[in-house]
Each structure stands twice: as structure tokens, then as C-alpha cells.
Length: 462
Image (cartoon, rainbow, N blue to C red; front, side):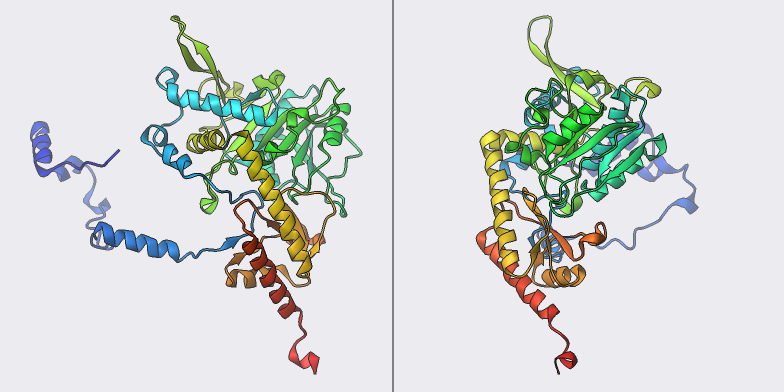
């Protein structure tokens, strides 16, 4: 909607109607000493052309880098139509549908989003989104505790889960008498080790792929969880579900309790740009039997008295709709704009398009790792990976990554702080956006930098 300022005549007419001499008189109850006075620090106005140039210069000051950083936020190509449509006024300015009967467009979009997410995850129901992947994991832990048939207050949390997700989860559940029990990983394969003890535990978190990019044995982990009376919480990258087995199908084919019970993750790969860290959104799906424990809202399709189809909020287990003490969460909004973009993105690409993106991302990462190994790096884990992998070099990560930035390359995520046992390990990622020339450029620069930084000082050579 364009901004149309009032003319001087408009202002005079309005003041005359209300009987005020001027606009300042409308604020005469504010003490003079509290008023800021004239804004002397604000620069004079400039033309549209000048402001466009100024903003372009400031944007370019950030530089443009060849990006091989993933670690939970991924650089995928987003068709121009996605945000061209998402930023139309009816989507861009729409907020949460408190008056459902007047929000049919928003409700239909959420309904379609939920349908797409249930088909991706293979589970019966999806909510209308959460804040982000980390908080979604925290909500899944709370949900599992509520839905568990036992009184257990412990949840098994693999060390292969994103470190920031684990931190967010601790923040969400830490003061609710819930313990997160760390589960170690195999140093050779990078896969999570099956726990040996499930005593007093309510659930097991299963990342797929895990933070190292390694693919877990999700069937074995899901079966183990159910055999020990635990709920299985799938933490997944939604893009991978275009080619990998859906969480709702994890486990043995003959198992009547087959499939993860809850699936969560971050929806950023589905049409949200990196955009300096957000906004993103979290998704959550679950088996139909646990729908009453799901936080947030669910949109359903119905018909009115005249048989005309319509959409309604069929589940609103939030404190804004029911008593706070009865709410499953205190989530206050649903990141609706980014969900809109994801719905458009999935609609435009379709199942085949999503699968092409996933396969191209995997193929590029395989080629990247091969080139980096040839350039002197080491592939740390033997486990199969999707579109991220862990490499290790002979030089400190900080020096290597800083030198790569100097060459216009964001080389990856430094794992040394979160996983010091891995040494000079870096998590690298390549998506469908990378070309063969991009991969060669990274490998060439890494080989040059590692070679240079590994050379002994001149005095030692003498």
C-alpha cells in the first residue's frame, strides 16, 4: 500500500474540526523538558536516485563471497516468482488469522502448507509452523514428555545434533525439570551410537542428516526407541526428504508402530534466503494420535451450510485461545510470511524439482570433498553424507578460514570449538548453486593456503 501524506489543506481542515490551533497543541500534555526538540542529527533529504545509490554502496560494502557454509542455513536458488508473489499486499501484510472467517486466503495457504509438509514427512498432521528449527526441537521435547506413557523426564540427545539447537532446547526445557542426556557418536563413521540405557527416558532425538552431514541409520534408531518404550523425534532437513525415506516410514516394515512419532526441523531451505540470519521458521509434524499434544494451530477444510468449501482453525491449543494453564505452548505467531514463501517454493518446484535440487546438492558436495582431498585435506568420517561433510587440514581453522575470506570464499563452519576432539575440522557444504568452476576455485585456494601455512619459517629452513 503506498504512503499518501496529508496535504496542508487536509491538516488545516482536520484541526479546524477538532478545534486545535496546530498539531503541537495535540501533544501539549507532554512536559517541555521531555521533548527532544529539533532532530539536528538527521541529514537533509535527498532524491530517490541519490538514496538508491547510497543504499547500493552500503550493500556492496559487505562484499560478495563464494559460500560453502551450511551448518543449518543453506544457500539454495529461489525462483523469482516466490517472493514476487509472497510480497504482494494480501500476503505481505497479513497477520495471524484471529478472525478466521475473514481470513480465508491465509487459512487456505496454511492448509496447503500443512498438506505439503505431511506428504514430505509421511506423518499424519502438521501445525502452522514455529519460530525456527532450534525452538521447534525444544517444543518437540516438551511434546514428547506430555505424550509419553511414562513419567520419565529425560530425553536422549545425540551430540550429532546441531550445537545451537541443543543450546536452544536446553533453554526451552532446562527449567522444567527435564534432563537432556547426551549420546556420543562413532569417531570413525560420524554416526550416532545406539544408546545402551533407556532408563527413565521418554524420547530419543534422531537427526537426519546429522550436524556432520552424515546419514544416520534411522531405521535401527527408530526401532530401538520403540522397543524401549521411547518416542522417536526426527530432526530433519526438509530438502533431503525429496530423496530420503520420510520419517513416517522409518523402522522395520513389519513393525506396527513404524515411523518417527514427531518430526521437526527448520524450513529455511524451502524458499527462505540466508538474509543475514533470518527470518526462518520451524516446522512440526506428528502422528495423528499425538495431535492433541501438538503446540500451535491446525487449519482444516470444511463446508458451510450451503455446501461451499471453506477453511477453519480446527485446533488452537494456545494460550491466546484457551486458559494459559491448559495451553501446550505460549507460541505467539507462526512466521506466516516465510511459510507463504515455502508454500510457493514447493508449489513451483513440485516433487520432481525438489528431488533435482537435493540430488544436485549431494552431487556437488561429493565432487567438492573429492577435490579438497586431492588438494591435501582429509575426509574425517566414513559415513555416507548428504550435502555437508567434515574435512580436516594441517593448519589451524581460524587461519585457514580467514585466508579463504581474503580470497572471497566463505570456506565452511569451524568445528574446533564445539568438537575439539576433531582437531582442525571444518564442516563444508555445496548446494545446487555451485558450479564446477566454483568447486575448483575453492580447492585451488585451499591447496595454496594450506601449502603456504604449512611451510616452516625461513629460520627453520636454514
